[in-house]
Length: 410
Length: 80
Image 1: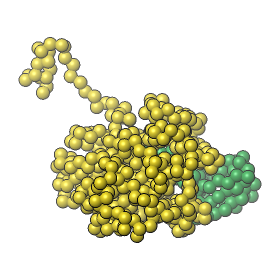
Image 2: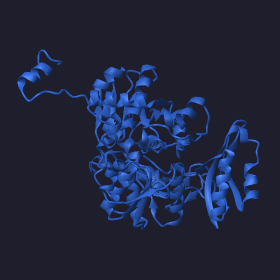
Image 3: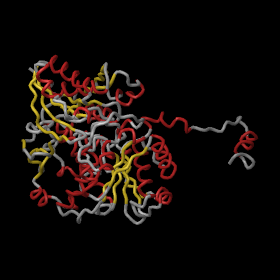
Image 4: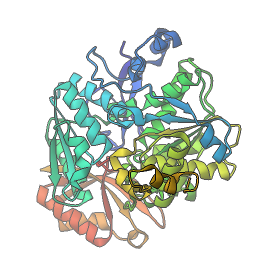
């Protein structure tokens, strides 16, 4: 059953039909999907959801799609792991990791893209596009392959070819653009205006955004239909952060769980932290910055949903924390070496932020805390390549014993 | 005629300068402000520019040279 009724401007409230549009015609602000929650509440129960597929599509009634033909590559319902080892290190008794590395293209983007590509096909597009060198590009290309649609992925020409292997394998049209990061942004905005394509994070952005709500739904369901006390999540454009919150709020609105008193904490890399900066200085406007960080998957200097992420952090009684590149790498190592989860650097930023919040006593020992790990490490493993230390032995037991035996190092 | 939707962010030193007025005087560009917030030390304006493609490109280049940061209104499009 489809309950989405239209789009509404998040600033001025102007409403629009469910169309592929990117911003409000009047005030040029983002638009978001609105739903008939009364009708939804009548048709939706915990039981109905739990009888659905073991994927993000068990929450289909809460997503803005209409037809039966879902473009699903097997996304969602990723593990929520009790992180006792990491919790002990950080002084947190009820710490959980939402491990969204385990999506088909190895990041949470599959959630958003699955909804966006499904909707793109419903709108009649035969082509989808995005600009990305990493997680989004791979996810769009993978979903386009599944949907038998054409895909265009725009990247700056100076990107290392190795970065594109995980995208090229799905055979999209890879377009390298001679120019700066800003030039690619500009070109994509122009292409989105002039070509009748579904541009994932431009004219499909309102639908793309909604897919990330499923992270909030899943965590609540996995906790026995309870919201966590604290959420720690990364913020790039800010979209994911706001949609985890929206997902929790919707379950409460629909009386599928009680009130949400979750404190929402966002984390950014220090070299690209405009939302954290706005939180710390107390402004309402997120001033754009030029990113300088190796944490490329969250290096967004002009975050489209920065203002809304800032509001969620403030209104929920949460906060914002940043981590240097070095702290992010330490966070990656800590997570891998305590919980066996190899996250990308954005996950390291989350763990570093969590560590700071816990050691400062902002997040208390007995608070049920969920840290969101949204992308896997192997795609950018070169950033931790110096971690490899080997023990060299000759192929005989004597040598092994000398190096690693009772008299050796270990 | 093309339309381009952009956000200008002004540093403190340019707050008192009539940059948008000059933009429409120096170039064949119609400027249409939709949202703005200007304080004594910083300011931003979301606006639509209408004109020939080359005029808009030249106008934006001039605004940047003056020290204004120019971004797409949809935020950064490139994602990780």
